[in-house]
Image 1 (cartoon, protein in one colour):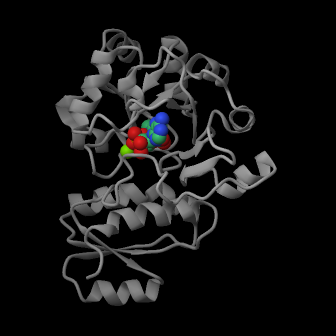
Image 2: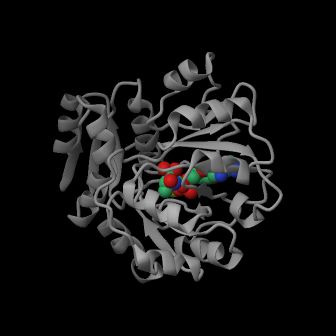
Image 3: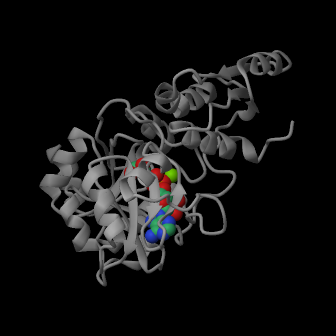
Length: 298
Ligand code: TXA
Ligand code: MG
């Protein structure tokens, strides 16, 4: 922990555990440090980064104004797997926002990172700690395998309990728009706000959400049922059925870990069963669709 703090204070990169996935963190006020994140990931510089802070009250330090919807969601959902887009404060570096006038902020719920953020005091810019276009890491070993020596220190906080990235809600729009589904569902957001948010799909999706994102080395095929998945798998050598559709929380928690494991074992085809489209099922379907997209249509 002391070392992680020193690395961040001196402009280095630290992989941090969060409840969703591991992040690749740098001091959000240090342009050179943030630049190293893009270099390590091989990520286009117009893709904005989320600023992670220790306390919900710090939203005012990063926003020029806090929309009432953002205040309401921050109040009930933070710390937690929710990122809020708000109008950015003047000082927020363009390299953090991809030159946009909004900034994404979240308070992660992981005890180690909460302590790190409390001691650091400021904001940490952090995308998921994977190379651009690859599967997000949910363990410290995933980070080491993917980024290796490109990260100065990996703070090992065990396996991430949620397993898929945070829900992103653009609170600069009315109604707010869900840009990326996650563990905080659109239904929960509707309940908290008293009216439904706008849907995720369409031209306003967050930059960086390319169709071919989250892809493992293995081809990913989608099946509607376990029976179908087993049939499809039987037609392919070195195939693997991915299915926890009877338990959405388990499915989300293990999704990326199983894709990493499939690659580590040299599996060539992963046949994934689509979960039902409710709650976390939306986030899992979204990520499976992206993992399958570029090679889908077998
Ligand atoms: O759960 C998470 O959100 C993880 C952990 C580490 O916090 N982070 C994460 O970051 O998934 P990343 O960079 O892999 O994905 C963030 C997404 C990107 O697609 C980015 O384009 C979008 O959020 N985003 C961030 N700030 C934005 C902004 N100001 N406007 C539009 N999209 C934004
Ligand atoms: Mg990512």
